[in-house]
Length: 246
Image (cartoon, rainbow, N blue to C red; front, side, top):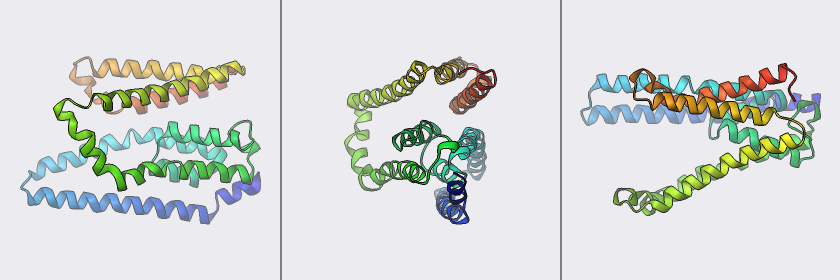
């Protein structure tokens, strides 16, 4: 296990992760500069442009707290470079955690744990977490324009009912899959997963109720509800574990 962790946190792994992340950051800066110059070219108010930049910065930093916590949580079993890479580019905390856990169990581990980690299991987890996420980006490169013309172009005509149904069905399916994992853990004698799901759901419902209340002082919660609910769910998992709940 120690040898696996040494390689997972080796300078080579850090270099690979840093190269990819720096490339993505360079792309973001490149398009930000192009957007700023285009705004100036078409005569947009510079004060409004600056306000848009500062607002975007604010609405980016706070939701990223949940991502940082995810990196810290996954680094205990996978080292720092892999979670850092995956959660800094394309992906989400819930997806990466689930993908890593499924790959770990498929590789023969009883759970995603540093104590059970082997070289072959680490490679399997890393492959699933990286190869499994590239298809969204590949689809956008080769098929997004056709998709927009075929589906999104019909929204204004009120003909996108099937698109809404499919999206809602996919979202409900994902939620049911997570709840199913909680009940599966409960059947094995662990109530923590299901309790965390319940706490997170209640927190999300509360934040949604607040920002939809129509009161201006709660509107800012719309952009942070998911991140806050995730942090509260993680905190509840730590608290329950500390209290000895299994």
